[in-house]
Image (tube, rainbow, N blue to C red):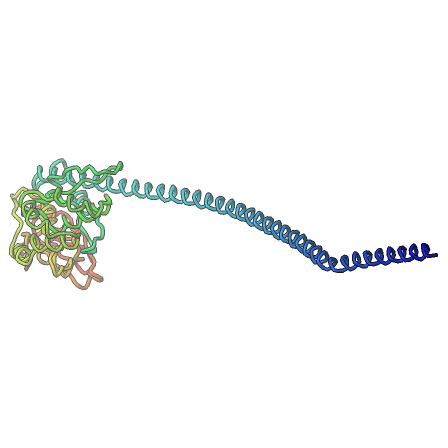
Amino acid sequence: MGIDTRAKTKRQTSVTLASGEASTVHQTRMIRSPTDKRSHDSLSTSTTETATTEMDITTTLQSILKRLKGIEEQQKKYEARLLTIEEDTMKRCDEQIGAESEQIHQILTEVRQEIRGDIRVIKEQIEQLGEGNNLQGGETRRQRIASGQNLYGNNRQASVYESQQLPLSQENLQGRQEYTPRSKFAKPQLLVFEAKSNERPLKFLRQLEKFIGFARIADDEFLLIIGQALKGAAAEWWDVVSEQVGTWEEFSKLFIARFWNASIQKRIRGMLDTGYYKEHSGQTRVTYAMKLIGDARDLRPQKTDEEIVQMLSKHYNQAIDEAGLDETLVKFLEVSDTQAGEIECIIPSHATRVGRRFFPLYTTPPGVLVASDSGDLRHVTVADSKC
């Protein structure tokens, strides 16, 4: 019995120990369980954040790739637009160059035609100078009048100084020299001014300005052109004043002050008031009148055609009735270019000259042409006239 009791007690002790160990293990498990749970939650959270970060990175990369693609497309559009603009610009430049070339060609053609016309006029004047006052070869009066009209009817152009311009005279065309510019196009010839008494300073100034405009001389080259155009006394004057000139306006002002000043114009007025045509001077009436008309038109203040006719009529032996004639220079030349002694005077009949009509004059013996009431011209002798 005692042995049974000890065995029973031992079993109870073992059970108790086993129960205690189980409780301890359970408690230990209960104690370690919160830590494991937090670790597991932390791991889950870290995994979720990593997945989210990867998704954000992927989204960002996709956005960047999309923007790069858009930039590439925009760059292609800009390149295409730039190419189009370049082609349009080249096309416009080609068109502009072609238009300017055509314009230059047209201007040069007109200049060549004008020069040919001037040469033709010079040849006619030389022939007239060789023949003297009495033209040979059976030339009729009508042809001579037409020749006088051509001298004033052609090549008259406007300028910055006056509304009318006489054609190139023989004197001013002497001494022309060629000018070779840098351009591949031919340029008009350059006129020369030597400050001689038979030259017209204002006419030279106008033609030099026209030459610079036609030849398209650059601003830094026109002073060289002036130096080439001035010869003799004019070149010596230019050597003195060239450093004072920087623009065309300055040159024009100094040139006029030297070669067309008040004293020179006063001398020209004296010649117009007191001069006369010399029959054996070697000049025709047309050539003589052309020079005086050009000088008179260059005077400042400028004289009208009527005043010029009134002054020039005193230079000839023929008496011209200004009130009865249409006072233009061409009609004045028609009267002044008649043969010497052909007409002594013209007596107008104001009742028949309505509107200042000009009656043609026919060759008659020395005497007087009188306009009748019917408008016809009848011839009377010098003794019958009161001129």
